[in-house]
Image 1 (cartoon, helix red, strand yellow):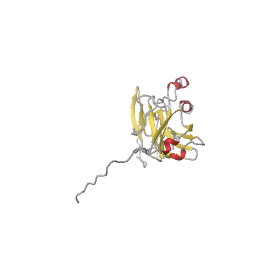
Image 2 (cartoon, one colour):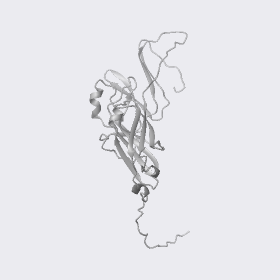
Image 3 (cartoon, helix red, strand yellow):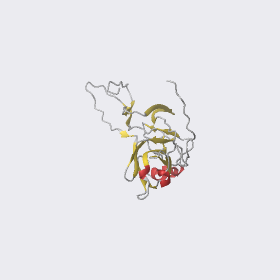
Image 4 (cartoon, helix red, strand yellow):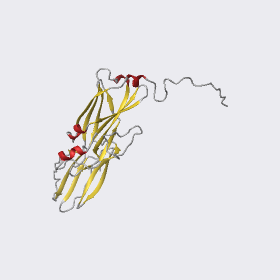
Amino acid sequence: GAYGGVVTLYEGPNDILFYNNDTEYIVFQRHNDGNRATTRATTRTRSRATYTASEYTEQGEETMTPPDMLFANYVEDYVPVKSVEPVRFPITLQPLVFTYKIRYEFLEEDGGLQYVASARGALSGMAKSVIMETGETSEEGATLIYDDCEITDYGVRALVASFGIPDFPNDNYVARAAERKNGLSLELILRNGKLIQLDFDVTDQVQKQPHGGVIVVSGIQIKPEDGTQGTGAFDVDVNGWGDVVDVPLPL
């Protein structure tokens, strides 16, 4: 239970998986992999109507919510000992979710940051799930959709939680890394209501940081014509609205 309780152990070897159970978005799944059963942690699917996958995103990649913080420890073949007094069983929970600090840097001069009202983003090519017993990530990739972006004096920043890159660790990681693409998207809602999506190839940065790190894209610029024109709903060049027609409404 979430608040403690008694767990029954059987005579002979026991396999025990410890993990924090206070997550919101993580989904736990049991899998039978050959001769053993494993537990996978994944997250919930989500979508954003305005998001469009870029050329840096694998075709058909699922869009998902970033996971919560998750820690675990797996003990294999633990043999309990009958005792009147409680037996201490010290363990250390290891992280299975890691954080990427993302910096979207605008040009210092004429970057157009003053036109931005809000921002959100997406990071593609990340692991869809993690095996909790071993810490290995799945081969399937997923795009993480996130909204919690902060506008700063240099641009936009975000903290994005992830299981890390797919299929990690493996014995041939360096040779296989180039086969995968990681795309970073920035969706800007300007003060005039216009929506702009910018896409960046961050494959090199992500592959060098399989378990969290810092991702930086720079040189971003919003053109004055985009930031000062009318809203996405109305065209500033529209002439008139036609004849006024009075329609009486019965009360």
